Each structure stands twice: as structure tokens, then as C-alpha cells.
Image (tube, rainbow, N blue to C red):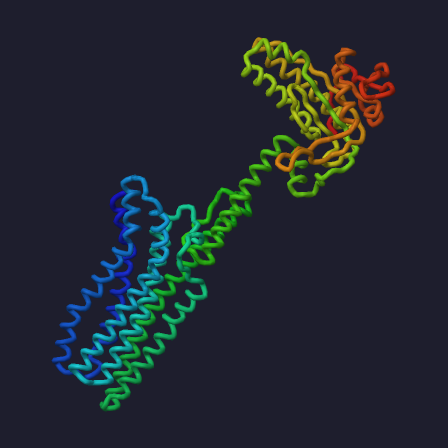
Length: 520
């Protein structure tokens, strides 16, 4: 922040107030001090003398009062400019003062304009004694001050939204500041109606009324009425155009911000933010949209992170709530893969090197599983557990599991080529596959859940993986899985084998060497 920017921020509201009231003074000079009514030379001299004192004070007093009111705002800006630590609660007080300042200034302005109406009416009453001129002066000053105050308020809003609020509220949240007043959209429109229609109508009718009560030639009165209506019409038309511009600008700018961000949301871009500059309904809507975008960003992060563990279609189904996770019996194919001789390798290499090796292995295996619509349930040490047919059911899940195992076999060869280039020993693994019924559910504590499978099918798949060591094979299938394959893969039977947890021998098969993965 430069010194020029600091000056603008500290004095933006005072300058806006001065400009608005200068316009009001100009209107009064046109409407009141034109020689519409007869008056004595003495009254004009006194009036000009009073003006030479009152007008400067009418501008000086608001400036001094505003500076006192803005003391927390100015202190906060000075500390930010010097990059010094803020005093406790100074930031909150400065923000509250800023949002309430337009209301404070319009009360101050209307008080000064009311004082102007009383003072000039008293001058003309004392020195002229013409009731028409006294009443005309009072009402013209009063309703001109009313219009000027309304215009000033919209000017304050314009300046606050464009200049000051973006500095104090870069993240929005104006609606949450306690102790602040809000002007609703219907109130704005009512003020606009008052400034642009009702007060001008009353002013013109008043001018006609006071002029018609003068004791003058009818032709002269008619010309004066015509002149008064032309001047009033031009002045209030100009004021109406200005007020319309300010109101529409203040409203449409915020609405355009909302439309811009919503258009980005529609296109799947959740990093845009509404620039919130008001604490009314539109500002609240902007804050809600920003909160929604943050939620969508978090949801997208979860979605993308979840997609690292499951296939994209599985992820989307789960996040959409179309997959029951409270427990169901499903017919699936379970795959276990386990690295061979991993413990000696871990002892022979630095820990970071071991992590890099196993992560490269897991990456390739997980991709092979996900490419065949499988779900990696967990990595445990050097072991992988995956399921095909859950949580999304597919009737060809046994075929997909076998194809995934063959793809894993091929990818293991690629991993070993890289390890060989680095002078490291190749990896070997065993895979066990079994098809059957499981209980699929979210399992764990209320604070931490995981999608898991429970049942004999899981245990048997794990046992089959271990049998690869006994038979010197790489992939072993159960008879239940073999029954679903038909002639798609050449397999050869192994001797029926007793496994832990089974009272009878299990039919098992091994895939013939050299079989390639067939895409579904």
C-alpha cells in the first residue's frame, strides 16, 4: 500500500460526502436564491452574511466529526501501512465502524440540512417578514437536503464497495460482522422512489403553490411558474439520473459477480470467489456461494483422492450414495497378492530405497486391478487385497480378476526391468483368486471406517496365495473361480489340497505360463 492509496482509503468517505453536499448546495442556489419572491435589500445582505459563515461550517463540521468517528479505521490503516501488529480488537472495531459509517453520515447530513432550513427561514422571517418566502425557503431547503442525503448515501455505498471494502474484507463475510446496520434491497428501492419521484413532485407542486399566492400580474406569475417548473424538472431529472446510476451500479456489480462465479461452477471450476462488498441480501448470497464453492472444492478433493484407491465409476457411485455401505451379502471374486522374500530385501537396503521399490510395485499392481474394474481394499505390508464385483456388481467378475492377475504378472516384469537397470534384485509375487459370497460393509469405529469384506471367501483367497510357495507357481485359482472361466484361459489342475480352516480338500488350478491378458 502506497501513501497515495493510504490517503484515498482514509479520506474516501469524507470526499464523497463533500461532493454530495456540494451538489445539494448547487441545487439550493438554483431553487431558493433565485429572485422568485420580492425581498428587501437588507434581507439579501443578511442572507449572504449568514451564508458566508454557515456554508463553511456546514462543510467543516462533518469533516471534523467524521475524522473523530473514523479514528479506529484510520488507526487500523496506519498500522497496516507501517506493517505493525494490530491492537487487540482494533480490526473488528474498524470493520464495524466502516459498515455503519454511511448511516452515521446520512444522520449527520440531514441534521445540517435541517439546521440550514431553520436558519435561512429565520433570517427571511426577521428581515423580510414574507411568510411565502419563509415557507418556501424552509421546505425547499428541507426536501433538497432530503434528496441530497439519499444521493449521498448511494454515493457512500458506491465508494465503500469500490474502494474501501475490498481492502477490509478481502474474503467477504460482511454479513457476519456484529453490531452493524443493513439496508435491504426493498429499502434501497423505496429511497430511490422517494428521491426520483415523490420529493420532486412535492417540490414542483410547492413551487407552483407558493408562486400562485403572490400578488402579481397573472402573466408574470405564469412565466414564473413555467420557469420554476423548468428549473425544478431539470435539476431533479439530473438527480434522478445520478441516483439511478448509483443504485443500478451498486446492485448490478454484485449480481454480475455472482453470475460470473455461478457460470464457473456450472463449468466445473470451483476456485472462483464472489467479491462480496455489501452486507445485504446480495452480499449474503455471495458469502453463501463462496462457502458452497469451498465445499465443492473439498468434495472434489475427496473425489479425486478417493479415485486414487478405486476405479472412477466405483468412486462416483459411492459418492452419489447409490451403493449401500451398511452391510450386504455379495457374490464376488477376491484376489490376494504377496511379494516373495520381501523381509531379506528390506534388511539389505536403506528404508527409503525399500519404500520406493514397494511403492513402484504397488502403483503398477493397483493400476492393473483398477483397469479391470477391481477395488483395492488395502495394502498390508507387502500384500495387496482386492475385490471384483463389489461395491458395483459385475457378472463377469471372475474373468476380470483373472485378467487383472495376468496384467499384474506383465507389469511385474516391467518393474523388474527398471530394478535391473538400477542394479537391484528382481521382485517375485504370488497371487491367489477365489470366488464366493462375502459380507461387504463399512467396518470400524464411528470415527474411522473402512469398506471391508468378511467371510470364508476372503480367508480361502489368502490361503491360495500362500500355496504358490508350495507348488512353485505364481497364480492359483480356486475351483469356484475356474467354473466361471469356460475356455477363455488355458489352465491346468493342481492336486486337491487341504488348507487351514477347511475340513476337505480344495480343487485348485494354475494358469499356464505365457497366457496374456484379454480385455473384457
